[in-house]
Length: 297
Image (cartoon, rainbow, N blue to C red; front, side, top):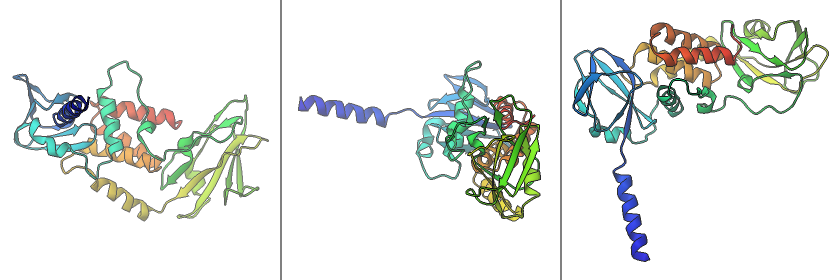
């Protein structure tokens, strides 16, 4: 029995050591081709490749590959055997968000017609579980909103046939009396109008309820100064790979901004990615999903 156990252990270790790496084409710029099973074809975003394949990058071309849903590898010249990229596939503390790479892998490998996986499954700190039940429901994604500028809806849904709602703003989450209350027939209030009542660097707390009722769900609104956001944005810009298309960069930054709760700015970058490269389906589908999630018309 000891011999058999040892044999199984050796076989298991051997199989792990020969585990095949998988590569997903993330971005393509210029003339890039794939050689697989002695057949040469044009590289296409979303194509999954085994390590037995080869990538050929013509002068001036660039291709980025996601390896094993975890690492991003960029190539800009010559013929490369993917089997030689094993070291670059090993998990490291690289700057590109692993959550982002897993999300892109998931979206690009999803078969047409399959249910789309929501971004929040791949994000951290996008909102807590709702703590109460009332006639107004505010999406947990809005638990914390970091606002810099522009219009963005702080929205809610109602389970009652109500015609009017009250949006209340508080100085602290424990205040019994709001500093201001706005009555509206809409199911949202523009973040821009909230910021107009605050000073930059201020943190306020808000909720929405059917007029005449109360809602214990208190959300956080942080008014972030432009210079602070500029530093955050610069760190996101610099965290990407050395070789990255402008559209892919905008999409990556959008994902990271959303994860960091800069929702109005994330919306701007999702739109930018779609405009720069409308031919990539994941850009358009994510933008539409984002608009639906946050009640953007």
